[in-house]
Length: 115
Figure 1 (cartoon, rainbow, N blue to C red):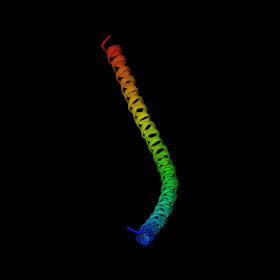
Figure 2: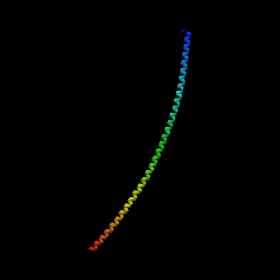
Figure 3: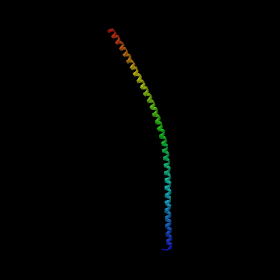
Figure 4: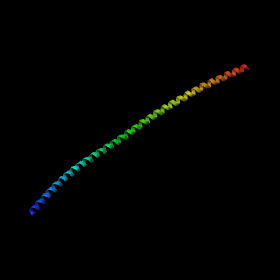
């Protein structure tokens, strides 16, 4: 091989390598762009998750407030019902005591007549 053929061969190899590395650089730039897009999408997802977290906290507070309100209503109804039952027992006991007193009075009168 003479010098001209070797120089041509070197130029061919240099051009081929340059073309291949240029293609690789273009591919790397495309990958970099894709990765940047993925980062932006991930940042958007993070923002959405943060918003969801805030919404969940707000809904949790609403649920707690509703539960507290229902608990208060239920407690008031139980108190009212307990008071009604206690009053009914008092009325029944008072009526029973009156009947007992009437029976005792009658028995004393009957015993007085029999004696």
